[in-house]
Amino acid sequence: MKKNQLHIRMTDDELELVKSKSKALGVNRSKLFLDTIKGISVENYLLKKAKLVTLIKASNEINKVGVNINQIAMKLNNIQKERNESVASLLTKLRKELPVLQEQLKLINVEIRNMR
Image (cartoon, rainbow, N blue to C red):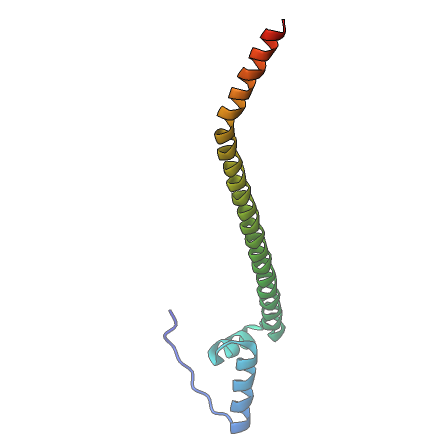
């Protein structure tokens, strides 16, 4: 845990420079000073920021692909549902017609027997 503080004096221009750099790099002023003292390059922040932007773009693209896949799946499910309803409707019609067909087959059978 950090418990020590360091107070430094600077001009208004220097303070504005510190504020603008820390804002541009997305770090607070303490981190900016400590990393500068440790020799950590400002370019590291820029690389991290560029990687983050790339990851965000990739994440957005993956999300779009996921949305497209969901839309395709929904359409396929609807098509399947319509087909199932069509098949069910056909089966119902066939069930209604089956006794008629059976009766006609019986009549044909009788006629064939009578032909012998």
